[in-house]
Length: 577
Ligand code: ADP
Ligand code: MG
Image (cartoon, rainbow, N blue to C red; front, side):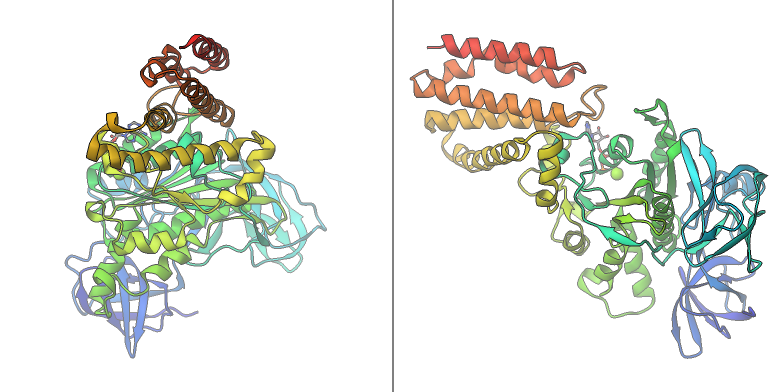
């Protein structure tokens, strides 16, 4: 397509109107003398409405707008891992290198290095018929991550020539019979989901090592979860803990317009994180997108789409990928600002009417899939939501809640009590519960679900009792209810609470989660038996083994100690009178 040039007609913050363009919806255009990266987001008569991914200060009517004839694309190929990008996949370190700490505008930097040579090892042979998504060859991208060079999703053909050796991402590594020359790099429009053969049922859990999540509100591989919570309730710590511990191969971390210092923390902290399974930097299997709140709002949206596109690309290689976005509220606020600049009819609290649809489109791109090639891969999405004042009735939380299947409600009351993770066990839920139960029964214990339900019932009863206690005090309760309060306290403090910063407790394997809960429930049974034979509650509650149980979770090799505590528990209750 021939690319033309138009003119800036009007500038309103991040939104520019231009005349004289032939671009399509979502085409990339370059605005002003500096050529600021921008995207067409509306066409009305002879005017194009454009959102600019960079600061528009000083851009004046009459300045040129250059067409590119293509939508915003991500560059996909070896070299994505370890990158820290801005919202439009420009590597931040390269930007700083090119323009100093004060990033100048209109700078184009490739998403992956086009000069670096990678060792390409062919898989396909001359004469092979390659289908879309099929592996042509591989590159060892990181020590532990093999990067599949795949047929682009829209290409097929017979191999006429295939090379082997060191190449840049732009050099031809394979030629098809029809003359098509294939380099390692692929370009993909970020707003379009990459295709797969089929979506599979969410029947495998995504292990996180967090008891309250795995045990109560589990996420499925390829599933979606929301973490809503007010300021300081632990969203960021949770997302970093999940990035570190979840059993995924690749992590895509999108820092979407949180406050500048939080982003600085991210840029400082994330590269320091060590992958506990390999003792290597977590960055080696991560991609970070960083938008500070002072970057233009349109770039936040771009970072979400670019992030999910890179996530899908690694999924297509057969990897399990987790994408986290911190925070989707900042993205929604960007939509609100742009919508008001466009003078669209505002919906609830000024958010555009399409807020829910946009969020849904994004979360829809998650899933455990059979790839075009026939292997299995997944993208799980965890989105933080930061409702102002922690009020979950606001539109972003409500719309997200309708879409995501898991809801980890962070509770500032728990934060104040220093109970972490501050996931409220009464308000949270997982709609994967039923589809995941068979997996837990088969792989951990036949009693997994039964125990989980028992524990939840105790917590439910506890909540009702607490209301009574508030009115009349706990001494007024019958003895069995006092015991229930105590057992609930044990579930809350010994099991639900988990320190992200304790070297052992930060990750709890399934078996340990199960054993610990089972021990607490066993204590409960012994306590009620004792009560039935007339032992007074204060004697039961004074049992030393109860406190011994509290410390077991802090041990790596916990089983001998748990066995000891169990034996102690049995003997204490036997002699109790
Ligand atoms: P948010 O992102 O919701 O504003 P943060 O994730 O930054 O909140 O958490 C605020 C603080 O709470 C942290 O600096 C940390 O001290 C504490 N915290 C959060 N989660 C945990 C956890 N799982 N274990 C221990 N401390 C935590
Ligand atoms: Mg945060």
